[in-house]
Image (cartoon, rainbow, N blue to C red; front, top):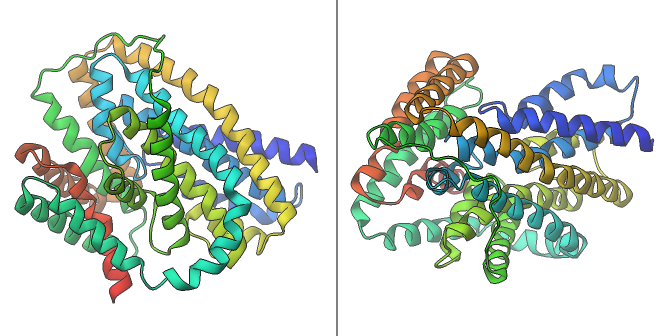
Length: 400
């Protein structure tokens, strides 16, 4: 059994590298394929090993998905808000620093969430029935706070509503798979890249030996904020890591770019690990990976939870070294190439992936979301308001 589980963890880490580095290839896709082949695989292994594979892949993905966001400006939905500050680090020759900050966030979130895991079990069991009906009011309050704190409130409201209505349309399209990829790629990826073409930017040589100088208080503040939002979104239906990012930004004041990158690194990991709490306590799956685990194993015992957490710790520990190594490879390659050519290549790559994965309709969504995504930086308001593409649909989900 032990060797089966260890082998499954290692294969999961390899698949997490694949999904983390290639924009548009999400862990949900691999999880669906695993479920499809599970009858065949179970002839040679056991169900716990398959679950450990999913967990190891998901944890590894949460560490490595920052690399394409920082070095290519090609985000998945969970790292969308990290593109702009990551891009600024890159243009200062500090891409490795940005990556290391997200790794600090991811590994800190992993350790912290494992430490508090069993303390949260009675908390969720007691609190869930009381907060289930009030989460929509929390979201509405977050939205109001987002808009009111902006200097250009009318423009902020306009961007939020425009992206929100577009999000409702896209997410409710029948028989359309993977809608978030073209939606987020346009709002936060290609829109940023297109605007950067006019700035005549150059990517400086990336310094490999970049030592982090970040205050312990900043790390703690970012991790506590990410933990709170990750917990809320892991417990509540319809909320994901992207929503957690918006909530964290509103409850954490004066968080500088280093703290923000730590926060962005932590949220996805917090959200995934704490969703295992929800699965164990109320048998509800809050993301695609846990849905796959639920369909494989049904319900879990406390012994299996311990095995899952150990799998997450092994995968996370390996991912720290993998993330830094792969980021060094990216930084060496990107330093010797023309910035304009890199930007054009990434735009072409995102477009090709959108066409391949989502077809002509996805391409139309990419064009529209790119146009919407360019509004906020042009009028000098926060890009956070474009997260209305998820927040408004979720609010309507609870209200209707």
